[in-house]
Length: 339
Image (cartoon, rainbow, N blue to C red; front, side, top):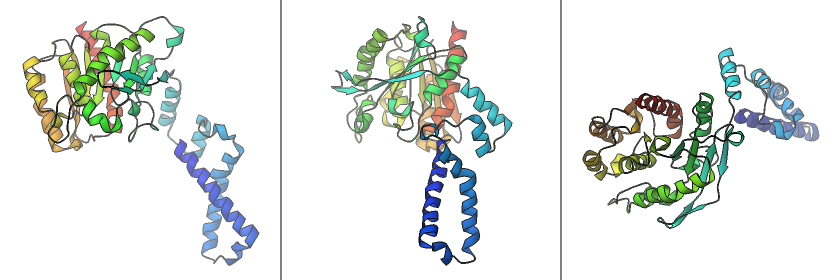
């Protein structure tokens, strides 16, 4: 609800200026008969929306109660019920680490670590979901365009009895196209994806396992990403099936990795790996065509893969956010059937 609060704050500032102009300089006297109704309407809006904000302490502006929300912006009873249900879901904790050295890449990256609700009050161990583009996962303020809402999704999964630890690995900004690409490309340069993946397995994972209560083994270690991150998740699961037992492969950028088609055909995924592929119809004809081409190769290799095509899906975070709960739920239930 922050945009509504900002609107009323701006409205308040605007009408404070108008009041000052009118009372101090006598500006109201210069208004025409056509302007006066608009001015009165503005005062009415000020009275209804802006003045109540002035009475609130500044630090409560973004913590409006459900009751206040309903008064300010009427919503249906269904929407209110959904909001209350969401508010009742226990929340996890996101920890932003100090940059971790990645020796193979010769750089360092911040990790964003999600711990499920109740982590600090238990001794249990948890499966781990490793994700690329950490800046885009938990916080809109650090994301490129919008956040995935991974913490909200995992809070809900924990409520349903499937708690996870999630580890977001920050991308390298201008280096991203190299780090998340496993092959060299004539136009887009060197591919450092193999070095990046080596650092995930040999540096990031031991770092996480030493500091948090994780479950070991591929059945409890997943990898996920979109676009170039989807491409790297495919590559990681294909070449390290002994590490990653499941992968979320959203909108994979196969167009920049032609050798991956032949590698997937020649090596194949493990028969028991769980793989969830997603593509949107609005992501471009080439993206869709390459996705379908890979589907023909992968589906005969494993019975635990799923290819999902959403006709109006766009190459954007809000699309991936909306699809993540279904992907994780499918992977979980497929794993339970396999067990």
